[in-house]
Length: 342
Ligand SMILES: NC(=O)c1ccc[n+]([C@@H]2O[C@H](COP(=O)([O-])OP(=O)(O)OC[C@H]3O[C@@H](n4cnc5c(N)ncnc54)[C@H](OP(=O)(O)O)[C@@H]3O)[C@@H](O)[C@H]2O)c1
Image (cartoon, rainbow, N blue to C red):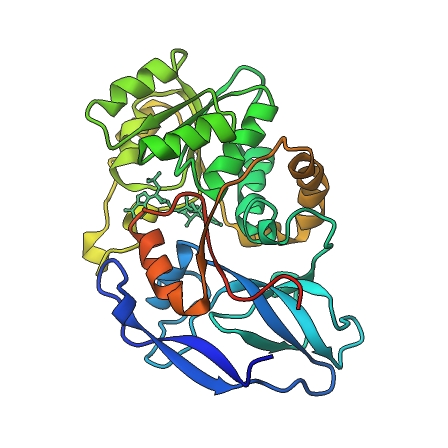
């Protein structure tokens, strides 16, 4: 074990897309586990788009971060010392730890820390397809949209963990799954690795025509991960009484102020008699066992696939986060902090 706890803290509020210089590396003391607590070492750190809004105090439950604050984030970790009755040395967990090497916890709610079954799929998947993003996708498909056999299901950010999982779950229900992604390489992953029926690169001219060709019967469900003008464009191709799962607004997260926000003309939503289904994953944490019961066997059988975009070393976290928030990540963004086995 190293002597100090490395942390990534905020150096200054990002203005627009986050930069490496918005963050600072600090060496602090390794925390000590008191009675009823355990110490864990972090292995993988999840990088998620919501973090941009969280840092700026725009994400629910997060106040604006100040200089020197530890950046929040979820890790796969291993308990190295325990004075807690429910956690033993060697246990693997998922924990809201922050961007740091070590964390002390007293357990807490299921959305703060939960034990991982080391035989329940790859450990890193607990941050992606078998973690919060996967639960989000499952909730949107199974609990909100409930698409049926033969429906056309379209999802944006389709190469990422939410979009990729949502499309595969819809495909498994007999839908035509069509992804929208920002490069040919992402589209290749969406079709060849995830098994979607088609994928449209929205950075190409006339992508709306490509989408029409990919959805000859129109769109029954649109799982929206990006918001902004793409939501307006796709709504034009929605079938009457179609459903839109409002999951994410990643095209809007880097804005500097509220004035930059892309507003929507609601007329087309009315004209389509669209059902707008807002999704917040926190509402579904109490269903995570049902989700894992369905998803773990699929992942183990190679029927629910995922793609990861890893950086090596905690000190490379700011650069990897900047990559995610400029849309250049290809698959689930995460950082390897330490080895799986100590
Ligand atoms: N509602 C909830 O409870 C909940 C929970 C989890 C996640 N989410 C949301 O779900 C969405 C997908 O999350 P994820 O973890 O799966 O992310 P992700 O797909 O791994 O990464 C974000 C992707 O968004 C796309 N993107 C589009 N416009 C962008 C822009 N202006 N800047 C940066 N990226 C842009 C990029 O893909 P392309 O190149 O393909 O555009 C980028 O790779 C996000 O909006 C996230 O906030 C919502």
